[in-house]
Length: 577
Ligand code: ADP
Ligand code: MG
View 1 (cartoon, protein in one colour):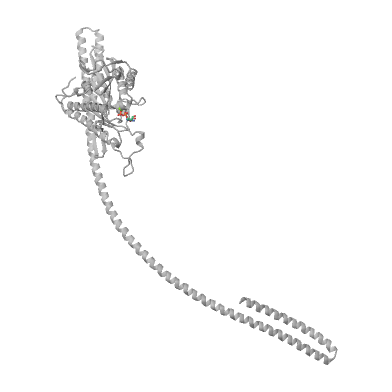
View 2 (tube, rainbow, N blue to C red):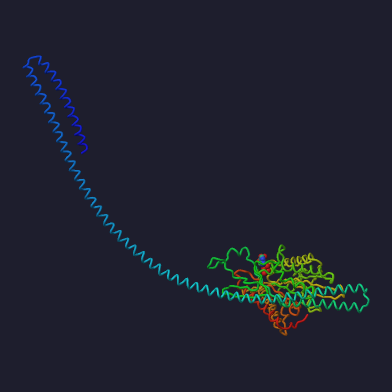
């Protein structure tokens, strides 16, 4: 249609052109007319007429042509308009269709939406029901927590009561210790007075000297008795438990519980209680003291230190370590050079005390190192098991049990003791192919003998200190050992169970104590029972792997500990010094 319009415009422009030309021709005609007028009027008129007709004709033709063209264009326009109307109609039909399609889609969508709303409602209902259950469960859990808390509170109260009782006992011990100290000071003062008087009177008479000697002796005995009482109050067989720390390699494969925390099968609940969790559940034991894995050699020795004083006072003292191989016996007794154990700390304390008392007493020390393997005694200062020919045995002597032929070396200082121990260790390792294995199958006994001579009066006191690293307590016999192994296992079982029997018999004040059942108990006879003092470490490993063995060790130790408790209320055991 636009094209047609353009065309019309063009045609109109041409009409205008033609009109312009017409007026130009009319001008020309006027000129001719004037020319012709000059010629004959008639001719002129005829010519003019003719010319006018020609012009009019040409003009008319042109106009007709244009009109025809115009009509054609109008037709084209009409056609285009018809087409446009068709297009508009088609468009209306299409939008009607679209509208219909839209409506049907909206219907479907609404239906889906409704379905979704329904589903959401169902979910909400489900959620509500779960929330209800959850609230019920939370209430149950809350009740259980309250109950657990109450049980814990009750337990804590009980533990508190036990602690209080223990503290009261400790206070009594402290009071007795204070009394002992007072007596000691009294003795000291009396001694000074005595000496003073003696000097002034220039030992006037032998009778007076004897009187003072007796008085001093009486004071000394009193102090010794009081000190003894202090230790007795603590129990003359004491059992201390020690848990060793995890070894580096054990840290890697720790079992974890449901909370993701490493499982702790051995727990030191208080300073006196230890709990072991095994396949059979929890079991708790009480001892005089339980050392957690974090407690070091110095803390351990603090508990043992008082016993050393007794040795210088002429008592027999025995400190031993019991437990399965790898539980820390050797660490406790011997320890590494950088962090020494009970042995060297005890000896250090002996020498220190001896020096402190040097004004009153002259001390002499000697030491021996022996090993009991397969119920046979080996002298480690004489070359250990090389000297097979000379079999050593325990004999009853005037000063208690002794081993004839056993080398006893004089030691004057700590360095001498170190040398003796070193020699013993070297001799032990020369005949053992596997030192660890060997040491777990034999008992190692380091003995220190003291002879104290009073500078005044010449009284003599003899004391003995046995420091023992026992054979491993694990039950090798049960794992189908044969030959030498079986013999070894039997020997170990015999000596360790004899040790238990002997201690039990002493604790029960039995008429017969089976000291002779093993070399170990026979040798230790003067150091077990009577007014001798025994201290046993029970060493346990902290891992679940060894929980069974730990339980066995703790049961054995608990038996030993119970003996001490039995003894406390009653009279002193019959076996005398
Ligand atoms: P046992 O003599 O009972 O066979 P050990 O004393 O040889 O056991 O101890 C086994 C391992 O554990 C050793 O490597 C030792 O150094 C280590 N160990 C034992 N007790 C402790 C402790 N209290 N602190 C650090 N390491 C220890
Ligand atoms: Mg060892």
